[in-house]
Length: 128
Image 1 (spheres, rainbow, N blue to C red):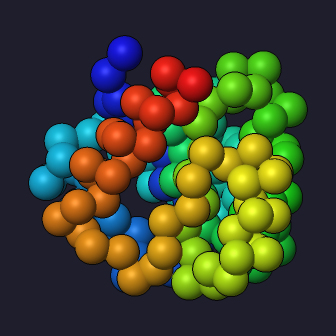
Image 2 (cartoon, rainbow, N blue to C red):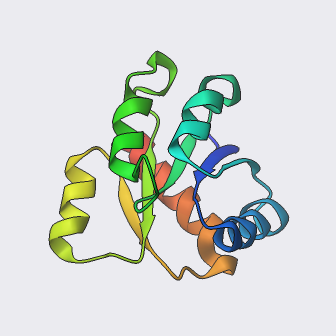
């Protein structure tokens, strides 16, 4: 199974723009870019992402809360989720993995490698 559709949830507009260039222009994905957890929840089922790239620190609804709410949607109950954060202490990383993420990508990320990284993580998750 090939990864085509990614939903990216990130409150920082500059990071969303860099990720969009990396994932759409460089890697060729179809991307839904959301500026909040609430926006992601409102659009997730209609977009049907194959992978969710999720910021950890967001106002009102953080990444862990967003993940918990996404998991309540039947069509996203098993969709692979990758957290993206600058907070990458081992204990925090383990918390994100324990919450159901397949991986944690550190900010700042390398835009030219992000698509390949997500493809590899997606393939690993699908083979598990």
